[in-house]
Length: 142
Image (cartoon, rainbow, N blue to C red; front, side, top):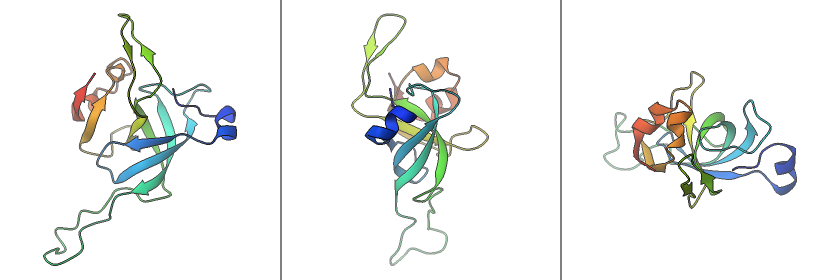
């Protein structure tokens, strides 16, 4: 669970790893869309990009066609889907799942993922929340 809302404002907002290839590496959660509780796997949140990857290759041999521009920059406000939480989650079959970090994947206004790949493991709870597109982009889900 990721604390958001008035309770989180006193402690500081939660930093999450961005595990897609949209250009962001670390984002800060500022709001939970449509809910006043902690964000869980599959919830839609509003984030601010804190760190982003390099905007493109620079150097010899890097022509105009080889520049891979990032889709997001530092300070951008975007929507994201929580794909991993450090808080334990109990599933209906009794299994308890806990990840090492909090992570998300950025999505656009239409609900489509901004990245074309998701690096790392994502939670299977995304299937119950109808985010199967993110599951198909991920290399592995638990």
